[in-house]
Image (cartoon, rainbow, N blue to C red; front, side, top):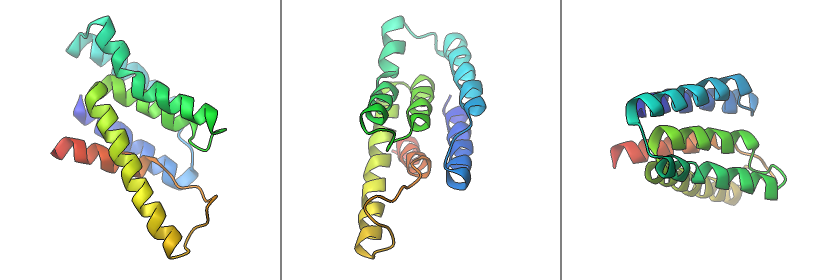
Length: 136
């Protein structure tokens, strides 16, 4: 399941960096693949499955509250990652990605490369957070 999650996040990174959006078809395809893989390979209980959706639901809630400063695509990607990885690894990857994004954002602000309202793609930082999860 980790390899599928890594492939998914790498494709999302490419689209997020180049176009600043993630195709709905890509998210739908991997979402369906994650559900099938979870049902066939992991066979989680219902509460475990629902628990794995919490990080993605939280990201979607944040995107709604921030008027899409955090994109809806980011929340859907985290939902799919939650199904692939489970709650613990997904939440840790999101927190690590947000931490890395904050550090890079602060450095860029200090050197006046970006302004306060600048937008940065989140997927590369989420991929780095996922790398931290895989190697820790």
